[in-house]
Length: 405
Image (cartoon, rainbow, N blue to C red; front, side):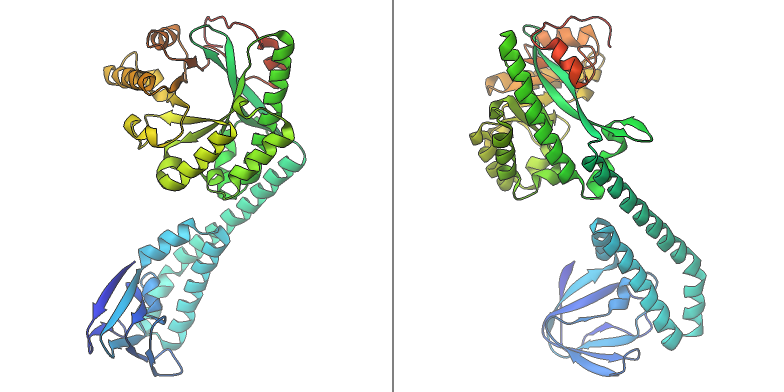
C-alpha cells in the first residue's frame, strides 16, 4: 500500500477500464459516478473506499471517480490483498475469494457488456476449480487440527531425548527434547510429518506448552536420578518456535510451569533461532532477559545460517551457540565452511559463550570440534534420539564412539 496526492479535477479511475487498484480517501473529497449503484452519483470523504473492483483479477470498473478537491488517497493493489489473504486465517481467505468472485459475477450479469460476460465466463472454470481446491484444503486442515487436538487429549505425543555430551570429557551433559507422535494409524511420526501443520492450524502453542511442561518434568526426574547416582547434573533443551515466542504470556507461563514441576530453571535450556531475534529485536531482548533472570539458559540454534553476527550477540543474553549441522557436514570437504566454524569457535570463546556442535556423524568431525575446544557435541555418532527408558540407562555414563548408530 502507498499514498498518492491528487489535485481537484484529476480523474482517478474511469468506467469500463480494467481495474488495478482500490482507494481509501485519507483527506479531501472524491466525486463518483457509479452505474452499478442505485445512487448513481455521490461524494466520498475521509475513510471511504471506492474502486473496489480493482481488487478483482481482470475485473473492470463500473464507475468514474474524480477528485472534488485536493485529496490524499491510500492506494491498495491486487497484490496487497493477495499477500494479506495468504497469511490470513484460511477460512477468512476462502471467504474473501468467494465473496469477491460472487460480487463480480452478479455485477456483470446486471451491468456488464456481452464481451465482459464472455471473458469472465471463460475464466469461470479456473476460478471454480481454485475455490474448490481451497475449500478442500480448508476441510483437510480442520481435520488435521482435530487429530492434533485429539493427540493431546489422548496422550499420543511423547518426548525422545538426544544426548548432548561434553567434548572435553565424554560424559552426557544434557539432552535435546524432541517430540514424536504415536499416531494410532500411521505409527511413530517425527516432527517432519506434523509440525508445519501444527503451525498452520495454530496448534503449535498448545503442543509447545505440552512439550515444555513434559521437558521440565523429565529434567527434574533426570536430575533426581543423577543425584542418587552421584553423577553430574544434566540439562534438557527445548525448541521454542517463533509463534510460541510471539505469545505475550510466554514468560509468565514458562515461569509458572517451572514452579509447578519443581524443576531448577538452570536445568532447562530454551533453543531459539536467529529469525526470532531479528523479528522484534527490542521485544526479544526484554523477553530473553526476563527468562534468563528467572534462571533458564538461552541457546541460539542453527547459528551461522541466519541474519545475526557474533558482534551483534552482546545485545542478547545468550548462553550457548549451536553450530548448524550444515557446517558440520561440509567442513571436512569445504575450506570456507571450516573457516566459518573456526571463526565462530574463536570468537565465542572470547565472548564467553559455550558452543554446541550438532550433526556430528563421523570421528573426523568429532576430532575437529575437539581440536577447536568446543564444549558440547550432538549427533548420530554419539547417539540417536532415545525413548525415556533408554535415557536412564546412560545417565552418569561416559559415551563410547564407533560407527554412527
